[in-house]
Image 1 (cartoon, rainbow, N blue to C red):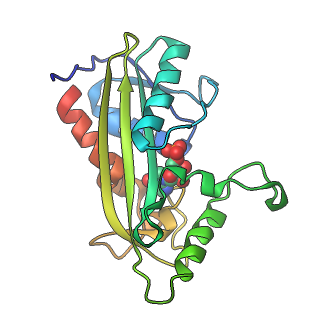
Image 2 (tube, rainbow, N blue to C red; image 1 turned 30 degrees about the vertical axis):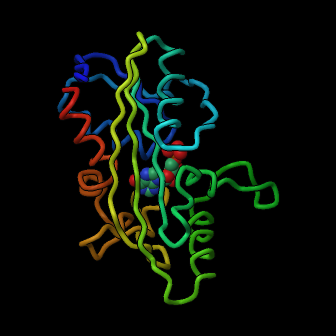
Image 3 (cartoon, rainbow, N blue to C red; image 1 turned 180 degrees about the vertical axis):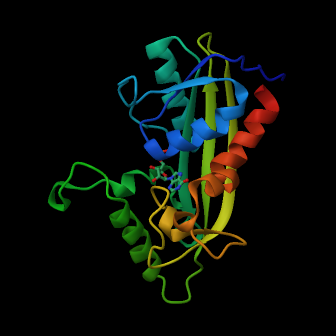
Length: 208
Ligand code: IMP
C-alpha cells in the first residue's frame, strides 16, 4: 500500500513527556512541520489500555486528532529486558508510578530503574543483562488514515545508574558498541542513534 505524504504544516505531537517532545521536535526540524504538543495544548492524557506499543501509539495519536482535528504523531516506547521476559515493555512508564506509601501520585524514574535491577538480581549474578529500547510512531490524519513505524536498539543494562542527562531509563541503558549510557551522552548525540531515531528514519522514508 502506498504511504501518504505528510505536507508541511501543523502537527500535534501527542505526548506529555518533555523528553520525548524534545527528541521528536529535533527530528522533525528539517521537514517544515510546525509541531505543538498535547501537553502544551492541555489535552487530557488518554488511558493507555493497549497491550502493544502499536495499540498504545494509536490510542494517543487518535485521541489528539479527535481533540484538535489536526494530524497527530504519537510515540509509544519502552524498555524490554531479555531476562525478565521483555518486561517492563509496554508497562515501562507504569513501573515508575509511585504508590501512596511511596509518596505518589507521580513518577520516580530512579525507583523504576531500581525495580528493574531488583528483579534482575533475583536471577543471580550471572544474569543476562541484555535489553532493548523500542519505539513505535503512529501518524493519524483527521480522515482516519494511519501510518505506523517501529524502531528498536539493542543494549545492556548497567548498575548503578550513570549520568544525569536524558530522561526516563537513560542512565542504565548502554547501547551496543558504546561505553557510555544514554544518560551520559549529549542529548543531541543520543537522539540520532536511539530507538526513536530508528523508527523516525522509517517514517521519513515513507511520508516525507
Ligand atoms: P509511554 O510511551 O508513554 O508508555 O512511556 C514509555 C516510557 O519508556 C517513558 O516514560 C520512559 O520512561 C521510557 N522511555 C522511552 N523512551 C526512552 C528513552 O529514550 N530513554 C529513556 N527512557 C525511555
